Figure 1 (tube, helix red, strand yellow):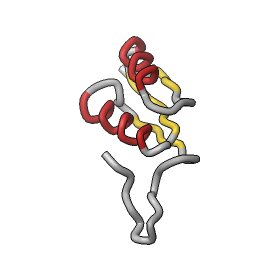
Figure 2 (cartoon, rainbow, N blue to C red):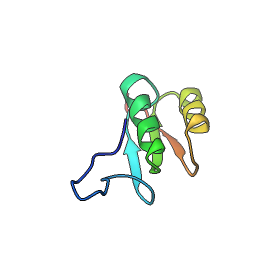
Figure 3 (cartoon, rainbow, N blue to C red):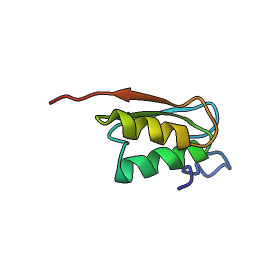
Figure 4 (cartoon, one colour):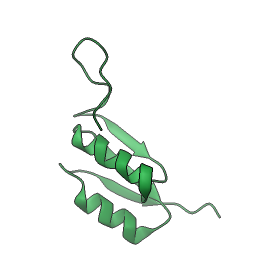
Amino acid sequence: MTAHATGDGETVLGEGHIALVTGSTDDIGAATARGLAETGATVVVHGRDSEKGKRLVAGLPNGGHAFYIADFA
């Protein structure tokens, strides 16, 4: 996954940006979190499974990422 280009050589998300990805401990959400981290964005991982969330954050490139647990059941 790459950041969306604006047409002027700039990307929408990258270094200096923060992205909140809800439901990101599995599947598409996890892939999205990884892709955003690869662009240089700081990612806030959100989900119900603490172990999966912490494991995902630990494996993201660059640094400064965080996991927040939330279960609205």
